[in-house]
Image (tube, rainbow, N blue to C red; front, side, top):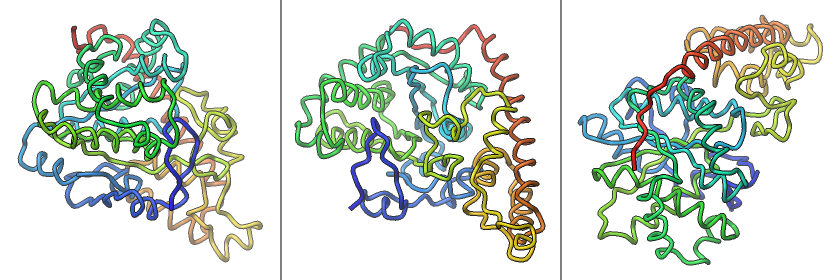
Length: 360
């Protein structure tokens, strides 16, 4: 049995297919979603819950929402956050009402970040970073957890819908801060439905699935509210440059942050695990094990939009025509272009002086 997935810990998923089976997830079906983004086309988006109701809303042009949160605990964001924003932007472009919550209450309860500091970090960096990564600010509703009395009220109501043993079964253990954070997140996930009952999708990393499961259990026990069960969309982790399953800020030499100096990132890429052979002669003869190469993974998940361009690189490296050194050089160049573009867009986003914040 797959171990409990802990959104507060560092447990890794070794087998995505086993995860789908053990936790009752659905395989993501690209055919059901028009003009899938590169994460969807390349299998990085791999599973979800109740995806058909979102596909139906998109097809019939009925109201639905996409929601995600910002945890304002640091002055930079993990490179993998880019995947979440890309998926939010995808649903935004296909008619979703987008909501971004700033989880300042959770940051205070679980990470010890004051509400004042959380708000400052969100306004100075996190929100502009999301915009720089593709979020459309004109079509996005923002709010702070600490200011949203409806979310807090829902959280207290939902706390009566679960037992301590059930909470432990989902999260592995329980402490007051974790419990409060979880029920408030359930309030966040369902908050857009207070205005109008409609389907909603939450694109997250698979480590956040416990929050989705808890919220869905609460909805089933709150039938008088007539909430739609929340849907979810899961993407695979951006792997660590040392070949481990997930990038982690606790290992800075194998992790890429935004923003980061392209020269520093390139040094990390040069040290990254490769799929090339030990000698040039062997590499030319046998080709690379592309699936083990972290530079190619960066190109696939983040740095190359065009599928034909990526396929050309894959075939050249797989056949041995392209060397590891050439692939790393290309990855460094693409990363420098990305960081330059991100920094320019971040600067522009910081100049936006009007955002659609919910007023309470």
